[in-house]
Image 1 (cartoon, one colour):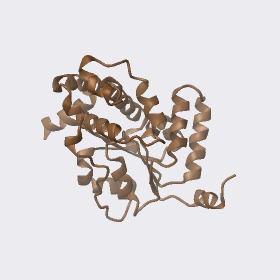
Image 2 (cartoon, one colour):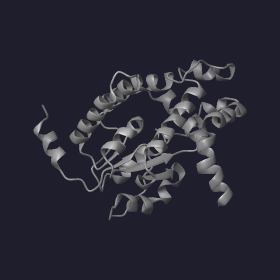
Image 3 (cartoon, helix red, strand yellow):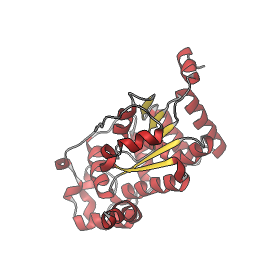
Image 4 (spheres, helix red, strand yellow):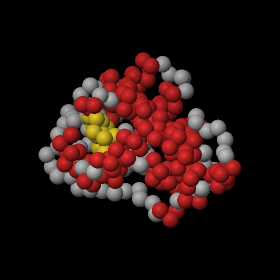
Length: 254
């Protein structure tokens, strides 16, 4: 049974229903914190429950209708105006189907930079509530290590194929599911320069202040210890479509 506090929270009207569904380490935390003064905003709420829902759905342990019902119940309970939560990216079709007026911000980071940050973060921080999801989401794409990836195996990390295939997979789902009229795509490096666009997209009146969180030193990157040609080949193999759309094209037309 819901508590009185949860029931009252679910009845509060929303100014907007917004999401940020970019991959982890693309600015999702910063965006949530930026919007907290203006909206009922949360970053990765109910982590164990949300990740379990995603795992159940992707592993086929939950029907489409049961997943949709769970997403609806979760939304009603949280009643947020903005949620920044990368696992929800896998439930984008359900969110779009349930909430045709919702707004979706898609943060996307240059794949090589994302890979360096993701691997460093994974190596240094292993929060217990995230470990089952981490193992599930990357193990799906892991097919062993090449000779060039010995340092990844020694540090308890997954292969580059596993990380990059998951990264590409998530964005394929996002762009295939969200109508262009409901999405705002922002490159991570441009977030602080797109505050006006974010404000207009979400229909906010107050000014936004740039926030940068979860930054890790570049010197900590395990990726820098791998053969750069090997890394670039893997990035090209899995994420050339992202590079061509959001980086190479922009540089050519700048």
